[in-house]
Every structure is written in C-alpha cells, then in structure tokens.
Length: 351
Ligand SMILES: Cc1cc2nc3c(=O)[nH]c(=O)nc-3n(C[C@H](O)[C@H](O)[C@H](O)COP(=O)(O)O)c2cc1C
Image (cartoon, rainbow, N blue to C red):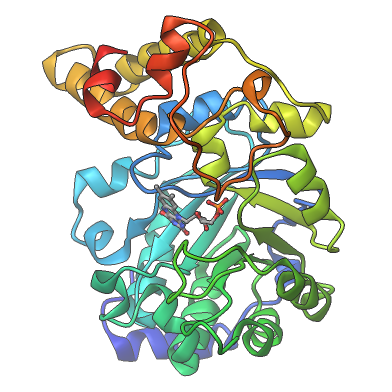
C-alpha cells in the first residue's frame, strides 16, 4: 500500500481525484433501523442480540493509527457476526494519508458493507489531535480524507457528524452539501453539538432541515429515541432512516417495539433471558477461559449501567419513558425487577 504523502497524492491524481459514487456498490438503507456504533458497549455479542430486530449494525470506532500499527485488539473491533447482514466499520483519524492507507487495508482484508468516518467523536483525546468532531472545522483535511478513502474503497463510504462544535453555532448544514459533493453515500447527523454532549435534547428541527439540504444523498437522524413514538416523530422529519444508541442500551427490545409499533411490558424474567443469551454469545466470542469469562462479565457490567435506567412500562403512570427523565427510587414487581432498577454496582454484580 501507499507509504508516503507524495505517493498518496500521485495515486489520487492517477485515479482522477475522486471516484464517482455510482461506481461503488449501492448502499440502500432507506427506512432501515440502524444500531449506532458504540465504543465498548457495542461489542459483537451485544450487536448479535440487537440484530434480532435492528437492520443495520456497525462495529465500535477503530482508531486509524492503531490499525496501521497492527494492534490486534483494534483489528478485533472490526469483526462481524454472520447474522450482521448490513454491517459497517467505523474509523477515526485526522489525516488523509493515514486514513486512506487504512481504508486500503480494510478494503483488502475486511468483509464489510460500508465504512463510516467518525466526525462526531467529542472526546479531548481525539478532538485535540484534529480527529472526530474537529474535522467539521478542518474542511480541507476533511475533504481529502473523504475523497482519498472513497478512491480506494470498493464499498460505500458514510460519514457521522454532529450539529457542530459549539452549542449555538450550527455547522452541519454548511458541510453536508460538500460531503455529498466529495462522494459520500450517506450522512448520519447526531442532533447535538460537541459542547452539548448529552445535556440538552437533540435538535430534530435542525436534523429535518439538514435532511432536505442533503437530498438526494440519504441522511439518517440520531438522538434521544427511546420509544416507538420517538421513532415515528423522527421518521416524520423526512430523514431516510434513524439511528439508535443509548435507547438500544437501555431497552435492547426497542427495535421490536418500533417494528411492531407497541410498548412491550417485558418481564424481569424475559430481560434476564436476554442477559443469559449475552453471556453465551460473550463466552463464544471472547472464549470460556478465565480471560473470556472476565471480559464477558466486564462488558455485561458496562451494559447493566445503562439497562438499569429502564423503567418497566407496566409501572409507568404515563407512557412512554423519555430518555432524559430520571425516575425517583421505585420497587419492582418482583425481586429481580427491583435488582435490575438498582444504580448500585454491587447489585449488577449480583445479577
Ligand atoms: C457508550 C457509548 C459509546 C459510543 N461510541 C460511539 C462510537 O464509537 N462512535 C460514534 O460515532 N458514536 C458513539 N457514540 C455516540 C452514539 O453513536 C450516538 O451518536 C449518541 O449516543 C446519540 O444517540 P442517542 O441519543 O440515541 O444515544 C457512543 C455513545 C455511547 C452512549
């Protein structure tokens, strides 16, 4: 593969600068339910559970430089389960040469349906190096990354962005037409800025405006979906489809609720069965030796820190539960349901 910046630029020129989208395989995700890329929590066993009802899945964010260094733990993030029939991998990086080099490697070695660039990551470690959300303000580098990766990939390239960096300065609507012109096949917009993190509700009016601007390129909307009502409202904004992140961690059966347009008053026993399935999938994936057991346990605990936020539908005075509402302490309808509502890590270990 390409080893220097000069080689990279020569390669791009020889290839005519950028490839036409039509030359890639088509990516038709219209109306599909997309499980968001989720670092740590969106591991393969968890996605296997969600895949029963979600349509599209994506691996956890992989750091471009770690992949290029051959770190096996980073390459492991790109593994796909055989049930994942619409599967993407997500890359994070700040530079066109390394990102393109990495895309070339992925193209040669990984079975995926699309590659997504993470231009939404807010964390300092990534942002301060010019990656993630910072690319929204580094237009030249961003363009070279999209064009470069698109040139070498045989599968479609997608981009995940935020509204912008600062709370009151929306950037997405200005960048989206460029991303389309650079040859991306789809954009996912998380309706919050870097500054906002999770403190405010996602701005779905702005997502709606951006979906119009993106047309004919598909735009997926992302933010705060925890019920089929939330999903219906989101779809009505004119987006091509919706992506769900915390909603899937808090209520893994949310995809079922959306598809079947109902609230599911799931019992604690049924929820426990889901955890048993995760355990079996975890031991299959990470191994059933001490290390595999510990990993399965660790990732289940990570997941339980979200699952405990679910309030059983049958206990609510008013449906549906909203993602930003934190309930006062309550007792479940049985011992297990109470245990599952606990915010205490000791109770998660008991589970
Ligand atoms: C635990 C966790 C891990 C995440 N990891 C990633 C990631 O690797 N890549 C990414 O693009 N977004 C990541 N996100 C952001 C989500 O994909 C999503 O954009 C955000 O949570 C908003 O959607 P929601 O309101 O449905 O949660 C992560 C979010 C959470 C809660």
